Image 1 (cartoon, rainbow, N blue to C red):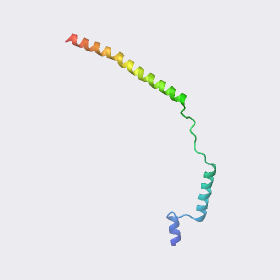
Image 2 (cartoon, rainbow, N blue to C red; image 1 turned 120 degrees about the vertical axis):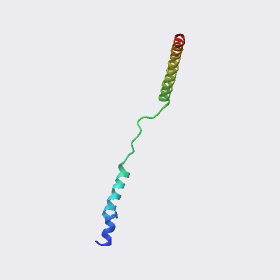
Image 3 (spheres, helix red, strand yellow; image 1 turned 180 degrees about the vertical axis):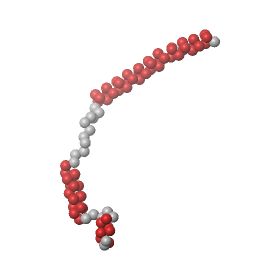
Image 4 (cartoon, helix red, strand yellow; image 1 turned 90 degrees about the horizontal axis):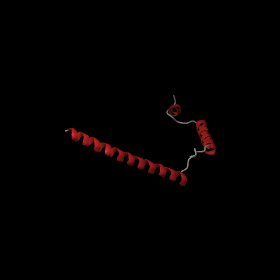
Length: 82
């Protein structure tokens, strides 16, 4: 093998390959359109998410309040058994 063939084997590009790469690059630049985000956050969506968040927090607080009397009553039962 000559020196020229070794450089080609190690990853050198042929002129035809470079031309093809350039053509593909131009095609991509011309026709490629990035994916557009279909969902955009607006004021109405934000207010809905805020309402959902408040509702979830309120529910979690109510659940904690409901569990507290159960814990107190179970502690009272445990003490009365002693």
